[in-house]
Image (tube, rainbow, N blue to C red; front, side, top):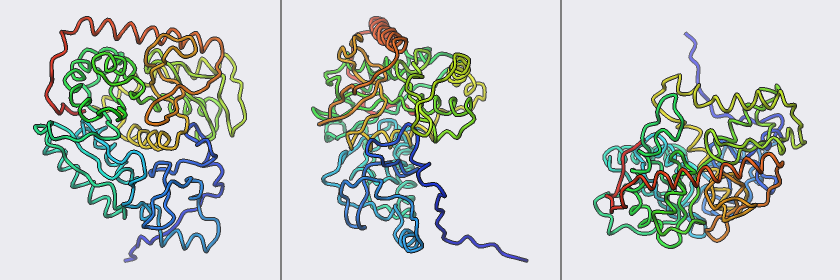
Length: 407
């Protein structure tokens, strides 16, 4: 009987340049290495300096291939991240699908010195911490350290650089994301003291729960957290737009660069005016645009029809890690952000191009069509109205308990 063996090998893309295309391409021409995030590369196993990831391009010579095999990227992450942001991260809802996935991706990307896992299901969070820590050993990653936080010891919690809120009520199959806004708003009220305690005066808060724009607006209104330190995750909308364009044009998705702004869900604004393929602008016909709109508008219905009993537990965690690394590098990315009256928009949280500077979010320069601008105005007004309406229906804010249900 013949026996097959798995041997170490290195796969080198024939066209390394192709891998650099897509919406998450960095401003400096670097590219986002799949599964590892973006923004920090070490020159040796004991060094963690901020070096452009494009210095880590796939090996092209036999000598470089051998070097890559003996010193894989995972082994080049350092335990010395005292100069890197974020150093400390708290993931609220860490026992759930999205929360544990975020911890896993952060841990294998070597981001931060400590990740605090926060969840009322402390036993499940501890099990995830054990499993992920062992995965770090397998991957040769020495940092960050995983710390399971005792929800009953809130008074002893220290402030962190980044708070990721992954706790959520179950989504309603086949419904609008706003159908469960009331449930998630009640949960957010319970979590508000925890979020404020962990974020302190300078920490950034990243919301993953839907409807993310409205919840970000509500968090701003029910806490003293500065709105420029609150962000909502929205990259998945752009990824789905990118995939729909690729299908319509018959090209590979990684060749397409495109983004969705506005409100997550039915109020999304696909920016057809800025679509490129291989870096070249592409003009889509009205028929093509309609096909693409139907594709992305129907995504949630198609997903719900499968009755998977889960949300996007693979895409979102990886997108979060890439978003964090772009934040650390001061690069531009789409996210739900406080408009601060930019571009004639109502003060509200909607997805716009964002850059981070000194821990504060700022709307980046962006030029869209008049139709897209009008749609953004509508989206901002819609988010503001939804937040005001739902908050008015809620009872006065009462101090909640630390921790939360999981996704």
